[in-house]
Image (tube, rainbow, N blue to C red; front, side, top):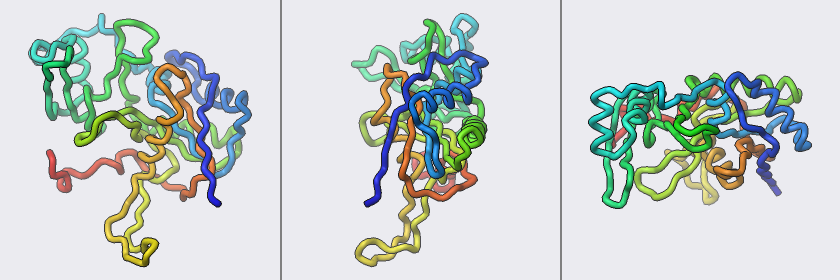
Length: 256
């Protein structure tokens, strides 16, 4: 019987700009008795990477533009936060404020291509008031660096996935999705295979990395300070993939 285990890794402290994140995560794995093995996959919430890389903005340093002021009035948002959202975006896809909402929402296309609320600009899990946390500048590069560092430390071939929490257009609630990848496939192409009844699969392509990211959300919490999750028992093939592989091309996107 195929067995999959999912373990949140405890003992990760508050991360500060300039911290050696690879050493911190490696030490936490050692302290938890989680010596990595070939085939293991680690997922991590992006915020510890963002903090270590200094992707933190103090609102006191932000001067809002007229465009930001206009959105802020309409959406009852802090114009400084709106300015940061606009800087992180290539375009605003939609913006709205429902009557029951205190603060409206901006659905934006992030400069990395992801479509998300507020361009993934977040106030939660920041150690200081009046600060915002942004995505890493290059989440794939951050994931590759961590994969290489931990693979070398534990002498194991592993995969690494950096995650963030996104909403979904047609369903309520949020789920974790992959925003940075190293070693693991973004999707698994099953076209040409057959199902359990021998029928040919023509379009089936599970989003392997997003499935991992979503599963990690089952064992971590906003207040738990366990951003790192170890998956053991997965069946996967090493791949030179990128989280960009999960973004639908514009010519195939029927909803732009």
